[in-house]
Length: 501
Image (cartoon, rainbow, N blue to C red; front, side, top):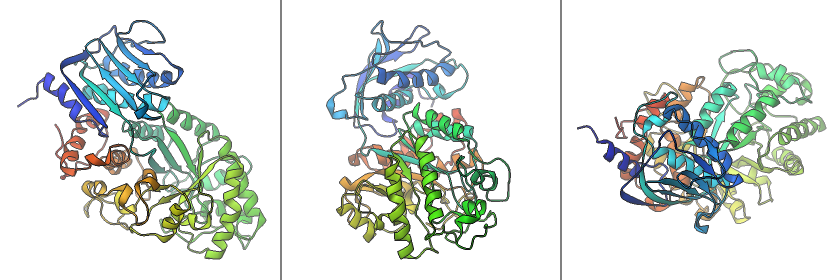
């Protein structure tokens, strides 16, 4: 039986992902977009979200949808005056027959409201060309705000390089699910991906290789990076750049001999093993290099965070690791940024502002537990739950399985606020889904591993803990399939999920 248009419109209220805090349907009420509909942004905070909304709606509807700062109360209105309960990132969305109103207390709230409104329109709204469908939105009142502030996605562009357009494509895809931080893993043994003007060989040499042996111009200029940051900001997303150190540094060591204790350049590396590289811990040249890189990255990164990596420094002794971090962490602060790092680093930090990102597969880590007692907040990224590069099952062609096989239900089946011993709900800053690219070289590869597990992470980061229920979540996840098909997303049709036609 084919679902009627009215039923489909109404059902979209039950298919929202992430799940809102509260939804009150207005039965028999529908708002319809028409060629005369306008979008009104009544505050400066609402302008960029209104522009994003228009950019989503115009291609598929074919409507002009002009953005105005005054005029009729009909149409779509983005304004202030949201309930204080919504906080800085929440919103209220009200749909009546004559207008749609998004109220928020900041630009972040408006961006989040826009993404909810997007899901209340037919899947064809995702098309890049005009579609002939009724553009109906079900009547409702939504009050919504996130469980956690940090809802992140990470893309490793060091193992395999992705062009600016490919990165923007992924940013656009994750923005639809209220992801608000995009972590770019820019440096590793296989490649250095960001121009550093004071150390040009980092990209001249280190920016020309990747896993599998491909060579060429495989890096971003600083202008290209600024453009990526601006693109993310236009979707309400903060970019977090990562300069991984003191390990994962072979590309830098292949570029400059003076970064090695023996004064000899390392050969370029295109394999996937980890833990063999380390900067020269006791050489002042190392810290001049580190400071120059931090200074240049910080200057072109408006967001508050800089990720210093810090993981898998297997050839660095504990004493040398502590020495290195004692000199590097103050440099991040010197240039006005808050340190984020893989959780190993936090054993060396007494500054509660520094943020460990937990990536292990255990449910106990004494250093992280001690850190939260000192006041640190934690980003949760357990490898056997939200590492998007893990295989779904033994037959998955892409991905690795060092953390295990991670099907969709496994990715959903944990509670970020009660997962790690000694880390409570209040200690968790949020969740982030990393996608490492040892086996991933195209956008289709990214999509196959990220979808549907990235939206699962978004659900865990946003939706109230009280709605955590796989049997109710799986149909909402399956309801995303028509949108992904319209967008051309190469998603994995997990047999665990009832996918909608």
